[in-house]
Length: 389
View 1 (cartoon, rainbow, N blue to C red):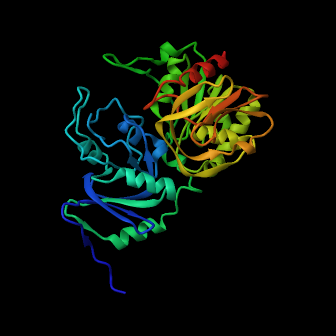
View 2 (cartoon, helix red, strand yellow):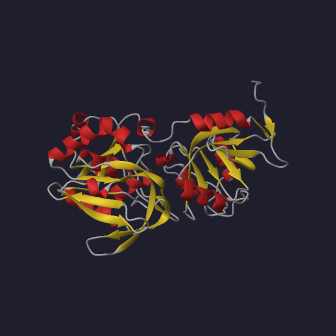
View 3 (tube, helix red, strand yellow):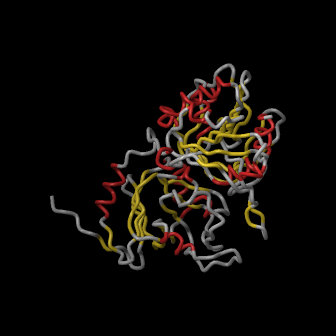
């Protein structure tokens, strides 16, 4: 068989998305040149693309944005949720324009290139979203070449051979390398981030947060709610956590299959529960807490990703508009007798929260820190910190 040669793109095309199914979608590349393989998912948020790209929960994924005008407010150093982007790339409808926002410090194209992330514009993102909704989130390769030269057979081979997120532990690749004390509060227009140094935190209830791929705004909101926060890596032991004399434990969001991360996380969480100290989990932390009490999780067909997901709070029937980002879910029917379901998604009825009836522990599937997204669920941080007293 003759060796495959690079193929020329159609006129004007400098980017391509190659799906494992064999579908090839041509577009205009921006950001870094090169290629990246991962799961292609869609996100329905109208704002916050920089926060989304830097959310560690998106490790291993290529994001198809349903909102057409991405990049129009540029990029700045304040709107990041981690030290670097973790999403592999972005797919957008319209070409990225010059930034039109007083807070912008650089063009999104420049920011993407600086962080070695690939962008693809000129795509019918609605059609791609419909494909994901009907066929599930596919594996694919996103590629950018200014010369328009692509080895499509090689890219297709790479897409087909990528194993997918099921069974993959990605938390270990995005967690903190060592423990550290969190400093800093939430951002305010005209003021920047509130200062919250170690001295100011003394005397406040102490939270040990396990970092499975956390967003900075989670820790900012814990601090705003009145806690002192120490962050530990994902593989920290229970003894290491207890060495900091915590009043409670926080289990963060993160990427990958919770069943894979559970191998090292669940035994530690079970010891946390046995300690009797309050435990609060979100997203991956929610799934890991569920696994720790005997429930099961499964890969979702298309996942939940957006800043506009309605969730019903079962205690009073109130509806919270939430920010979600997850491709795995807790199976409600597998929750044990001492776990009470507290929230459900109004999109598909899947579990969005539960609490234990015999321990001070609760968790939600969504991201209550609202970065990006609404602020309907910020009360959860206050509830947790209140339990620490």
